Amino acid sequence: MDMLRIGIMGVAGTLLAIQFKSGKSEYGIYITVVLSLIIFFSVLGHIGTIVEAMKGIGRFIQMDQAYIGTLIKMLGITYIAEFSSGICKDAGYQTIASQIEIFGKLAVMLLSLPILMTLLNTIREFLS
Image (cartoon, rainbow, N blue to C red; front, top):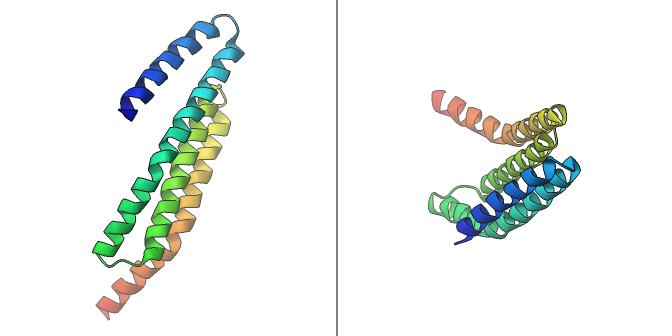
């Protein structure tokens, strides 16, 4: 039901923004930003379910909870970077959007380095 509501709001907001873009283009951008924030906070309401499911998977396979926390942080970084980048692209600021995407990728890479090092150490131990 939430997906239907979000879909209808998205289409209605897009049509409204298109209507305003012909006259006052800044109103179209404002509508887009407000609608994007509404959808963003709707998704945040479901993040708890995703976090609990990931923690359950971690307990099932007896994985260190620190790794699950890192994966959740990566998910958050990618979601926020994509959201921010999309708003910048809609406003016509492609360069800023690209910089946000690059920073998001670098932040995920930085978070993944300890996991990568642990994996490489495990492989080295198996080979020796």
